[in-house]
Structures are given as structure tokens and as C-alpha cells.
Amino acid sequence: MKETATFGAGCFWGVEACFMKIDGVLSTATGYMGGTLENPGYKEVCSGNTGHAEVLQLEFDSTVVTYDTLLDSFWSIHNPTTLNQQGPDMGTQYRSVIFCHTDDQITLAENSKEKLQNSGKYSSEIVTQIVHAEPFYRAEEYHQQYLKKHGLGSCSVNL
Image 1: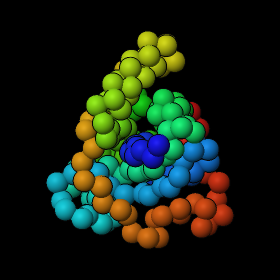
Image 2: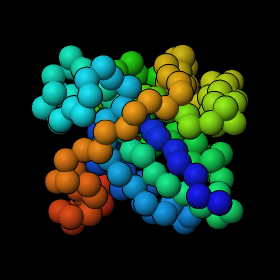
Image 3: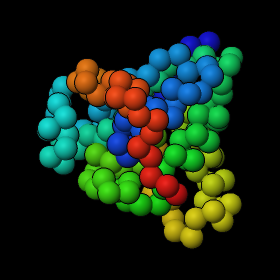
């Protein structure tokens, strides 16, 4: 069954590269979600004035990969305890956020966050937002599969 998931975990280039490797992920698109401006561009989002997060929206086959597995990947690729920052990238556009497309996704995301918080992996509180999905605005074409186009494997921060 085809479903949609949307994650913000810092710069969307690295997030996309990680999720593209997962069996059952059918397609990916980098973009913007969670702000006030309709159809924002990269420069507007980077200004920090639109309220959007850089996100990856993906379609996945839930008979091949579960939403819980995607959540596990999401948690593993960034530091969910840093507010509005991942590595050198700072600003609300780099916040840790899960935009949920169904009530089931909200429940699974909240349970996953609580389990991780209680695991003792982090000494600080997880600041990841879990909210209902908002309109998705696809990023400019040069941002789509950016790392792959440039022969780069990742740009993720070492945790």
C-alpha cells in the first residue's frame, strides 16, 4: 500500500540521501513545509522569516517498509535534542520535525519519540515537533537528489 511520510532533520539533501537507500521507499522529494508563505523558494525559507522547515517528503510501500522503520531511520540520522540546529546549520528551517499525514502516524511518532527519550541515549530532552502535515512545496529542481547528482554519499553530521 502506498503511503506518504514527511520528515525534517536538518538539511534536506542528507535526509533524502539516507531515505533513498531504504527498500520500500518509492520516491522522494525535497521541499518546504510548516510555514506561512505560499510556494516559498529556497532563499525565502533560508531567511528564517517564512516558518518553513526543509523537509523530505517520500512515498513508501507499507507492505515492504513500515512507518516505524522509517521513524527509526529518522531518529538515527540527526540529533533530535538540538533546537533549530543540525551541525553547522542553524535556523528554524533546520528544526527536527515529523509532519504526520494520518492519526496513526501521529500515534506511532509520539510512541517512538517517547521510547527514544526513555532509552537513555540522550541526556537532553528530545525537541522534535510532531504535527499534522501542512501543504508541501517542492523545492527547486537543483535540490532534488542533490547529493546523488553531485556524486556525494552524504552530508550528515557525525552523531
